[in-house]
Image 1 (cartoon, rainbow, N blue to C red):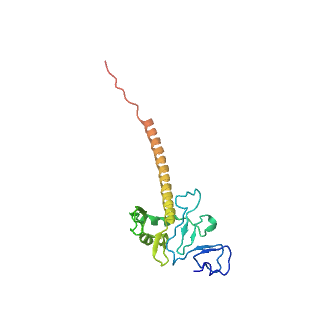
Image 2: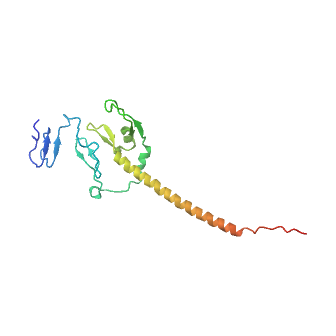
Image 3: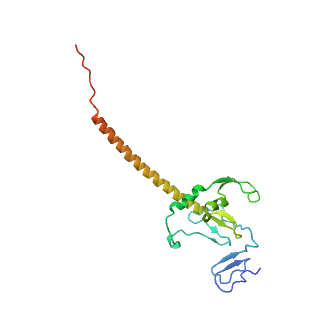
Length: 189
């Protein structure tokens, strides 16, 4: 395969084992989805990065990050009850099949097909359209929403308990004031 052979215009491209795409600019393409089915990059594992973003990949092999700033978003609205869907999820422990993980490392997570039944927006599909994985970043945002809702309820309950306690103390104090004085017995001699 002639690397970059499909490039007709564009600048600052790097194509290694990939024909490129006509009109690409500022793009790196390494290998093809058909020919390469695994990728190994040295110098990443156990290299700490104090400030950074998680890298995601789409079904075409496109790497990127998800910006969270308001400037990237539209139709923003509170999550409200949408996050209640996670209450129907069934977390599991599992081990990947031997072909994927010969060491059978214990894993924790969700079954994507089950998650899709609860909320299809929480899963991603593979290139064939079959359910592939859970969008754990979205699940985490929903967990945060549910936690905050519960936290607000607990705070409200604490206020109510404090008000009830203050009321009971006031009533107790009033009862103490209205108690008759203890009678003393007089001895007749």
